[in-house]
Image (cartoon, rainbow, N blue to C red; front, side, top):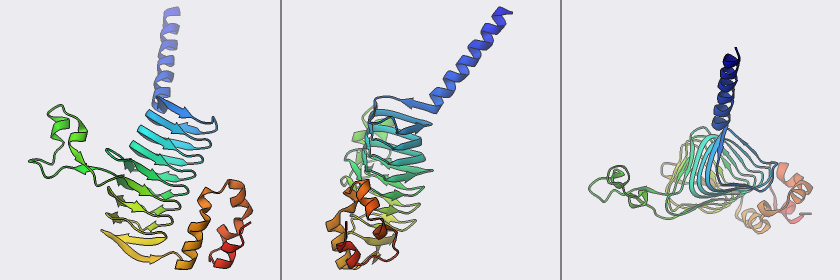
Amino acid sequence: MVDIIKRKIKKFLFKIETYNSLRNSIEKVELINSKSKIQSSIITGNVKVETDSEIKSAKLYGDISIGRGAKLLGPLFVSGKVTIGDFTSVNGPNTDILSGIHPIRIGNFCSIARNVSIQEYNHKFNRLSSYFIETNILEGEMLNDIQSKGGVEIGNDVWIGSQTVILSGVSLSDGVVVAANSTVTKSFPPYSIIAGSPAKIIGYRFSEEIIDQIIKLEWWNWDLEKIKRNKDIFIKDDVNLKDLFNID
């Protein structure tokens, strides 16, 4: 009878241990503040998570920095050299942010929808085969199988719609809006609205004068108290110069 009880206890403890390992697998992660929440995620490499962030159902591999108040709600996958700014939201499912050679940097207060792919590298296709033959067959390094046009830079307050693909060497300036189902192969100026495959400018969010003033304000670098103190300019549907010049 005692042996039966011991076996049941051992089996129960094994289930608990297995559940915990599936819930979170974390290695070398630096939590700046215990207020951050990590759930059902696998994290390995040199990963830094700032205060008040939330990570759920994510796989993070590499040299990754997550800003304060950021939300990574998967399932999603981030790998390589990636920086995600303060209060930026990255949503799954099926969202990938992949750096292989150069870094990917995403600014503050960005909104990234589901099914988005940001990939800094690509296959080499000037060889006999575009297949990852060194990696998978010749026991070589993956770096030998890939090429890149440069890092990916995404500014602040950028909204990226679902099903979007962003390729290497692209810079999206502050305030850009990317329509759903777009393929972004080149860089775009501040507050432009882009759409299509390949993406092109279809308009701007504001007038040139208002865009210039917003860029001067750099509100995405304000502390939260200042944002709350000036809440009226954030909740109004129409932005005008008068409001932007009367910042508290």
